[in-house]
Amino acid sequence: MVKVKPFAAIRPPKAIAKEVSARPYDVMNSVEAKAEAGEMSLLHITKPEIDFEPIAGEHEQRTYDKAVANYKLWKEKGWLVKEEKECYYVYAQTMEGRTQYGIILCAHTDDYATGAIKKHELTRKEKEDDRMIHVRIQNANIEPVFFAYPDNEEIDAIMFRYISHVPEYDFVADEDGFGHKLWVIDDDKDIARITEIFSTIPAFYVADGHHRTAAAARVGAEKKAQNPNHTGDEEYNYFMTVCFPDNQLKIIDYNRVVKDLNGLSEAEFIAKLGADFDVKEIGAEIYKPCALHNFAMYIGGKWYSLTAKPGTYNDNDPIGVLDVTICSNLIFDKILNLGDLRTSDRIDFVGGIRGLGELKKRVDSGEMKAAFALYPVSMQQLINIADSGNIMPPKTTWFEPKLRSGLAIHELSK
Image (cartoon, rainbow, N blue to C red; front, side, top):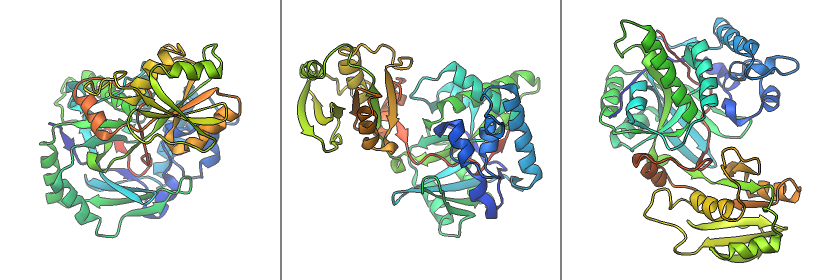
């Protein structure tokens, strides 16, 4: 079971919420962030290297110092203000006509240690270290992580009661056209009941933010070791997350492009694919995978349908059933010999939000030799893998829309 609590968020006044909020730090590079950041943008705090000319290194001490100075300045200017009481928050995101509703809350670091917060991806120490530095120097969770939980009708009912009222924030982001709304749950009875209901929820599932979750847990452990009077209820034991019911979330495709064919000609490569796939030439028109175990390939100016033959995968294995596993085993390992996909410089990964036209573009430009589009993973597959203690192959899930940063910040001391 999981432990949650409300918190007094640091957040922007209603009139400037759109101007302060920003896309997450890891969905753009520094040049893009510099171009995107307005005067009040949280990017000056999450990507402070943009305040230097030329742009500074992300891991330089002066960059970290600037992050701290900017966070302090934003509070002094009244662009970020602390809530008067501990609350929960309903957060709604709208993308392409579909809206999902989640609750912004604080989860407990002990649940990560015990496995009640379930992960499905491996983390890299250098990325954990970087996120840990940011939490430590700010003594705050500046950006939330993204969790899923088994849907609960009573939590839904409480949320929907609030969303019938005028939201505190309501805007459409200029960068991507996604809608964002926020309501404050400040009724003491509702707050107590939400806390109580979540104590019966068996697990959280990390959807997006594995490194930030691990970093928050490490900072909590660090502060625990430094406090001889530690009780487990201190604010530093908690970190900010947006939790969505699993039945509202949609995972989109996460595709692959490769730089070479391991010395094979296009004809030789396609012939080798025939051993494990039914290969069908589609032509110049973009082809999108239509079902599990069906892939789209773009090579030599043409699209192909690849359907894995029976016996080449194991639908009874939570990892073996994944199309990323099939693609990796039968194409990237068996034919292309790419090695470790986490470190190979012969492959790149393209989020489905960019569309299949992006795959075609990168191959047609000559940068890449072939592209592969995969049928998206389902939430149930993610849950099955996390529940079984397995880890997904790299770059398997892509959630959209991304959480907007700056709508709420959690400080690790009251």
